[in-house]
Image 1 (cartoon, rainbow, N blue to C red):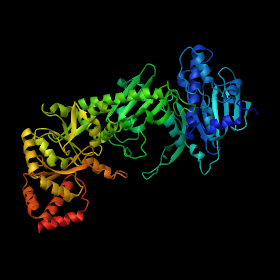
Image 2: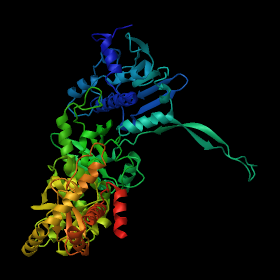
Image 3: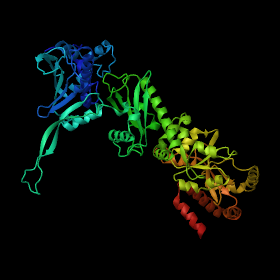
Image 4: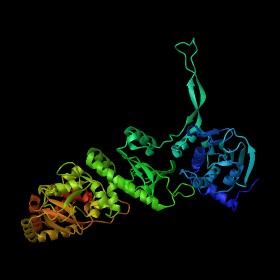
Length: 629
């Protein structure tokens, strides 16, 4: 028994139990090592005529024995001598791959360069046996260890060059079911998940069924009998679709890859690629879904792109590659230049990720912009699904992403009766229009009926109808577009009155100031003031808001767990041309109790029109009943 050539047993414990967070990647690591061995012998055969191999003969073979609880990963690669087994496996964190890579003139992409991937096998195995025969000799040697005390080296037998890694799985416990790995289904799943694009075939004998020939005298009612048989099958696809030229891949192939790898029933709305060359080389294949994933707005939803290094999956979802406002995008990124940590599960250099993420974000923005211009119907469908997230991107960045994301926004135009972009709105606005007007609420059809909306439309100006909870907040942080400020039509002052209208309003406001003071006193702090309005159409009264907090913001914040207590500065506006105004004037002069009833009814009625709750529905109903008597 030889001791491991490390400072202590503690280091081995660290390798086995602490470096890796996911036990199932042991197979990925062993297949990667086998792929490296195949690379090495192929490269050696190019310079050493005594080594006779062809690339088509090279493969990784998997096998398992459920009864013996073993999994075997075999290759017909470079193999190892006795000394190499002792050096490579007896010294933790040593890898011959790095020496081999730097010693060769021809560039070769070797996956397992840390030398600890082999030890991941001890996460699931109580014993690991390695049988290897070097391509330079006829002797085979076996290395064996329980991963605790040390290892043994003994002469063995192997028919050809290459290496077998045989794992004897640990016994099952209440916490871990190691027997799960002893099945065709699970091994194939792990290969397809982590090693599907390893450049060599990963093969395994699979059990299949076939019908036995019917006897010659079989009648029409003969029932077919079946037999089981074993057939070697390649589990991986080898050639990643993102490495192929886009001109050589059909849209149907991209769609099938997307549906298969990302478990979607529908083809994507858009597919695009990135091939980056320079300081950091990588390939990316990105998809925009055609519908909302069922869990997109679930708090457990995880954004991110699949991250590969040299065709081997490193992370199923790398969140750092996507900004939150593009969390719906799916795809893969593959780079051999990534600085991975020792377990190859995460990255060491965040600046690499930042550079990739920046390029990816720009590409997504560019593709969405092109889609809006060239395929409007598709873009409107995409925006309906994912536009809320883009708006949140502007809001949560406090408007810093406005220049990038605002051109992607769409809103329903009350004037044009269709979805329009902010640029389209601004270009269609009359020359004298000084602002972008919008109305915020829960339902576009109800917003279109608001008297404030009708008033703006009557002046020849369009109104954007905003029915998502983020819209009002988004407009406020954007502040303006094309040098035109955003104005909520439910705001207290839109500045649309003519000088003549302003003068007339000021005169009447002075004339009825007593009435307004009396009504404000009746409402007892519910409004900051009562005023005349020229924009209520056929409504007797309306509620608007002064200051930063709009009526819609108040409604949304009130529905949040900790949003209560934040209120707008409400203004009760009155329509001087409505018949009820004359009744208010009469009641103020002759019947204070009736004025109180009218004031409360008008105020609560205005709240209902704005979609705001009535504080005391019973009092409102009683007041209304008294007026009807």
